[in-house]
Image 1: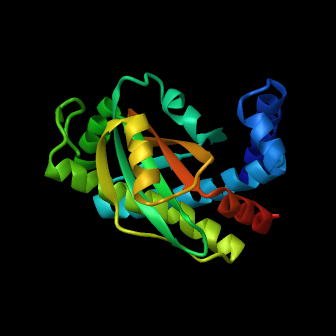
Image 2: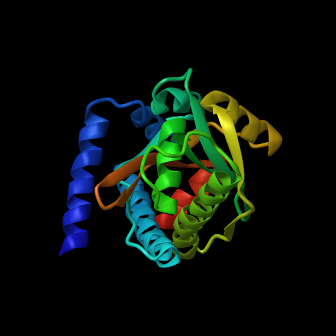
Image 3: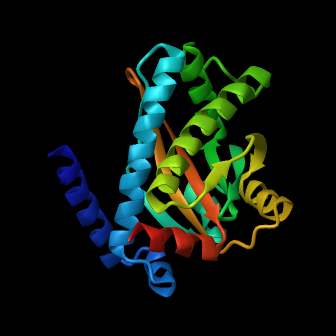
Length: 228
């Protein structure tokens, strides 16, 4: 069936990544996280993102498709370069997590991609939005709330760990500055980040962002152990 085919492709992708010596390989080993653990996280993330697409489509009255093709575990200091140009400005929306774990959800996009996503959500011609105004911030907050909450809810249900995102906040800055401000402001002792490439599709348009979970290391281990 489709899910089995997806899981087989995912397993092959993860195996190829580990064998090629990607930077998250030694991290997974040091934390005791296996290929199967990462597979479970990605499958659950895609269940959540499918739920998010359904909710978003109903709200907007048009079909929006979403997918998470890759999930990586990276050292927090590697995240800015994972986005691309470290000197570029990005748009981030973060939601601190409360409950049985400590951490934050962060949805990040290159500035241009953020503007394109705003255009997609409001149904206006791509390229029209050239600055981040109050309406744009509102749209990105709503998207992050729907997407982040959907993914977290699925993980929470599967692990029986109470996790709840709080009110979203928009930040518009260099990615390193965004990460630093979140970690300091919310007093998070963080070493690793789950980075999920997140793709939005509407008709012929595609926008790519990254949904990130910044858990404290012990919280990350707790989630992984509960998924086994």
